[in-house]
Structures are given as C-alpha cells and as structure tokens.
Image (tube, rainbow, N blue to C red):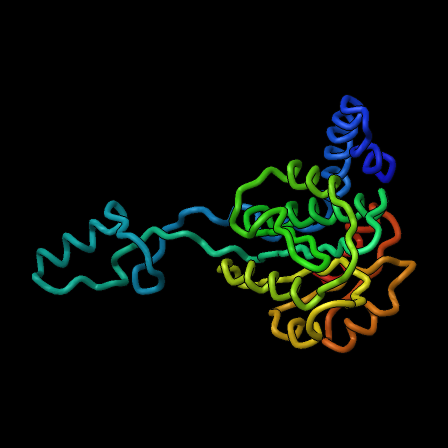
Length: 251
C-alpha cells in the first residue's frame, strides 16, 4: 500500500492511474474490519404518532381515523402512525494531520483510516485534512464514493504549520449537521500544535474524541489524549488501522 500510494503521484499518468485503482481496492479490503455501526440507517420507518414526528402514514392510521370519525371523538395519537427517517447510531469525522511530510506510508495510513470510517458509518461520515487551514475531502452529509475520497487522500501533499485547534473546531461544525446518537471525532496526528489557539479547549468541546498517532512519534499525542481524557492508539503501518479503530471506538 505504501508503494502504491507513492506511485499514485508518478509522472507517468498510465502508471498513476493503475496505482490509484489498485490502491483504492486494496485500501477498502483492508479497512473492512470491525462492526458496521450504522449500516441500514437513514431509512424511512413508521412509528406511533405520540412517539415520533413525521408525515402521517395514512394507510397504517386508517383504522384509528375511522374509529374516531364513527365515535365523533378526537383521534388518539397512539392510534396514528407517522413515517420518518431513523437517526444514525454513530457519526464519524476523521481529521488528518497533513502538516510536514506526507510520505507514501502516511498517505496509505490516512487512506485506510478514511475507508474504515466509510465502512463503520456508511451514511454519516466525513474526512478533513489540515495544516494551517482545513480542507474537507468529504463533508458529513455529502454522498461520495469512498474510492474517490481515498484517491483524493493519495494526492495530498504535506504543508508546514499545524493548527490543531482550528481542525477540531471544523470537526465540531461537521458533526453539528448529524443527528446521530454518538458523534465521534477521530484525530490522526502527532498532536503537536504549532499554530493557532490552544487545542485543549476545542478538544474538550467535542462529544467524543479519539486519537490515533504514529508509532514512532506518539509522545505528544499521548500527553494530549491524557489531558483531555481521550482514548488513543498508535499505528506503524496501514494494516494497523483496523485494530487501532477497534481500540478507540469499541472498547
């Protein structure tokens, strides 16, 4: 995966295109580990009108309407049904640190992490990349093929300073669009902030923050995670991502 991530930016366009297809499929295969926490959400369901808001389900409510009309009484809301969208169980936003060098290995790790988010929360996930500013590779309720997101990640280039507070604030704005019961920010970073405000306050404002740090540079990430009470894990290779997700999301 590291080699394919490097080849994605080859000057030979035919080679780059082939590498993109191979890398995308391999990344998705590796990421398909762990529970699918939101599969099937976002569908229409029917519930009693005294328990949910929605549009009247006329067919399912007909008996109650007929009884109320025959008795000339007010309709009992419990005898009516409404159709409404179910809420997702979990929403995920992946925040990727692209400050400094983005090597093939770092790109591959980020790509597998994005694919893991798509696997676990297929209808309610987003991916942000940040250095001194934040770019959205996929916003929370945007419909995008995970392969397209992976390919965009493999095209990333590293930049200089790290505005960690700004990135976490952007993650909060993404999750404000979600109605999920559990809203999780997964931060892929060494957590060494070199620009902007102190990230501690921004981190504590999030519903739930998990940190995944590079195995060879995890000291600052561990300190940051302990300061805010976040779960954390380390990764050395792209194939470590599924286990890291399990550590921070499932335990």
